[in-house]
Length: 499
Image (cartoon, rainbow, N blue to C red; front, side, top):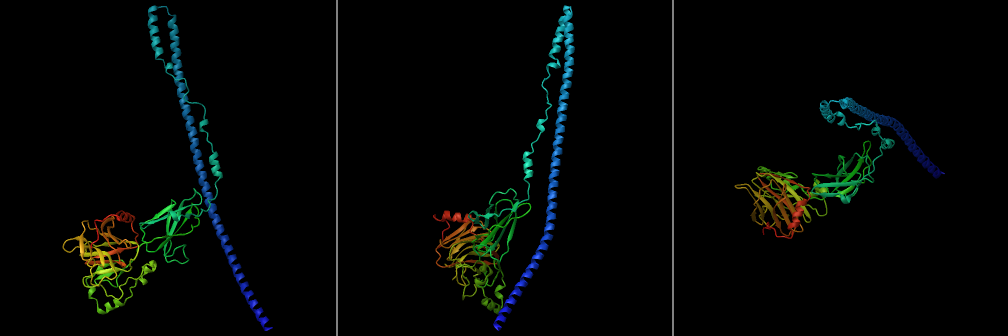
């Protein structure tokens, strides 16, 4: 009996909870119905007002058109009346003159004097030759028909009868195969299922992500909106690819309403991203994530500050940029177990190694710096080593101490470069082919190329003395650089390696 009572209590509790859920749902439905009625009334009034306004505008256009066409009919009638009246007046005068001349000719013909007859006949002949009657056109300049002023409103009537409420635009479809990602731009191409002349514009949304496939419920980056697009494609420019992918979606809009967003598509935006590793840089360098400034007092910090700096976690595993871009190929590049660069090695490295692929980054530097260098180095670069003065680094070097010069350096050998010194340098590294090229990043003019064979992973490396520089990452290899590399891949370069 007790078990049956307990079972019945559970059933009662379950029913009570279910009844409560149903009651709450009924209240919710009633509230939704009230809101719907209020909103429907408001929307209906607004739409009806808009409809009346549109029809009033259409009536005004028709009235204006009618008034203009009636005016044209009146002007045409007045013009024809004037033409015919003028022609009638001229003909009447010519006829009167001709009748007078005819009467004079008859009188002359009846005269008997030979002398007077000869002169009179000659005068009559001259008068006939000059008579207005012989210069008149006997064709009416205007007709009494006004049929050419008739109009046929069949087509317009059919168009008016076809007027209806604007439909919700169809959902576009993004064609991944036609989308392009190159030179830090993305071109997105889409179409509608069928042509729609009522489409006014499109809205494109995109956001960065590190996940391939459709957007997730929670993403790290918000949607960015591009409005007012008139064509069925759009190119985003000036991008910095600091995530592995970008997700896109698009919707069509007419004058009244927007349609649904297309199915999102995700495009890979591969680019090389790194930060500067301040943990192992020379103490005279004030290092931010992507910029460095010379600080002459940096080496005079207290010993306890140096110790704190040594024990600080600088692993790129914990770097925000690496969190966004981490991949199996990327690994921490910290100089484990080594001290900072010191002495005259005013060096700072990147925090991401290169062990495969093609990569590109740019450096903007102060041309007034006493010395500056940029290139790559092995992770085994010694703490006293200066860039380009050992076989563990390759660089392009600006000397601004006594006489300004730009040289390519490797293994303590240098080659002077006969070219203007740019303020921005692009660096291209093809790990598999052992190519390291330097470019004027503004003109993409090749400055120098090292050709070698990398036996170990390399890492971006920089040096500055009495100056500053900044690094721009997240850049794809420019198309002009790739095409130039292909042209030179099977030819001997004048900028050969320094070995």
